[in-house]
Length: 114
Image (cartoon, rainbow, N blue to C red):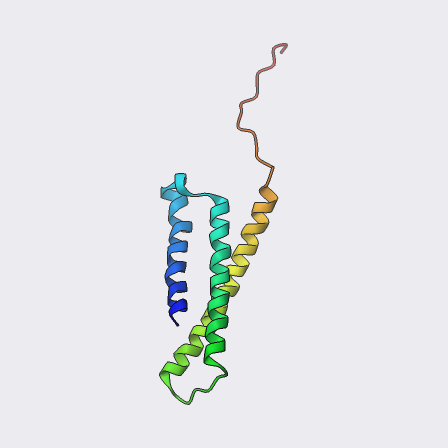
């Protein structure tokens, strides 16, 4: 349970980094660092969801609120894992397509003979 709490706090910090730093602190934002943080977050959610599901076992709720909350935490953990998996896939494809294709920012020289 504690690791899932850590995942929630970690995810809030990651989302703050991904949303705020490119706009206000562009100097501290790096696309590959954001990709790495996304991969780590995806792995954390997968590990936490697997650990909580294996600790809790099979569904056995009989109106118990704590039991239902734990099963909901497992379900939402896997949902967030799938969501971050999709985002990481999209970011990874974008990063791989953009490698080595940097446009030159130099101004073209005017032709002398024209």
